[in-house]
Length: 113
Length: 113
Image (cartoon, rainbow over all chains, first blue to last red; front, side, top):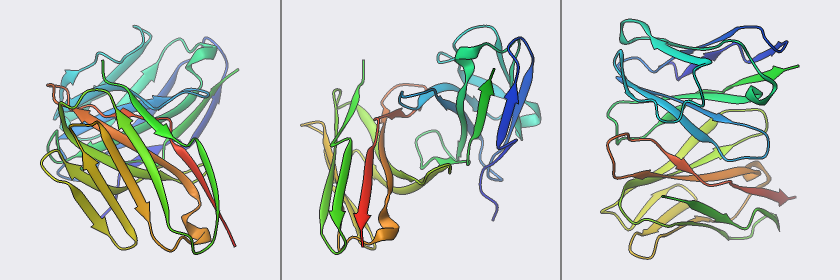
């Protein structure tokens, strides 16, 4: 069974450009989460989907970040326009129920120059 | 506000030693606690999930304990091997509606041959 898949694995973009990250959760997992780690800090929660609905987006830093989950399957996280402080590693995770074991993808390393 | 602390930040041990990694959290109202390992440049691999009603969980050479009332968890690694070298992260799932994980900053473990 495939795990959580994220792509691209790396992205280098210029300040002001747009980047879209994609996450494919484990099949059958209704719960999908985005997290990120910026330089030297802990991994921080961004938002939580249950199927196609946003359950909690309290961790989204500002309105330059837009997450969607089409049809309750894969999810995208768009950053527009990207700023230098957006650089970091963006992780996606999925779980069967909200309180059950979370499985993480390998992350997307985003560098904004 | 829930905070998670991991001590020590880094640990170096000779192969074969038994070792303990510590995790503390400030609010005992949690659903569960999850331990992960992260290899350099890789994603997070789930090691153990302990429900709030449980005292410990075991998987192979790993044993995780949970003392919810005192806000502490330990990860015990028996007979350490160089392949155990990685960063170990603990994360708690607070008992609120979001099911998000709150991460510690991790312990970087090096097992010397």
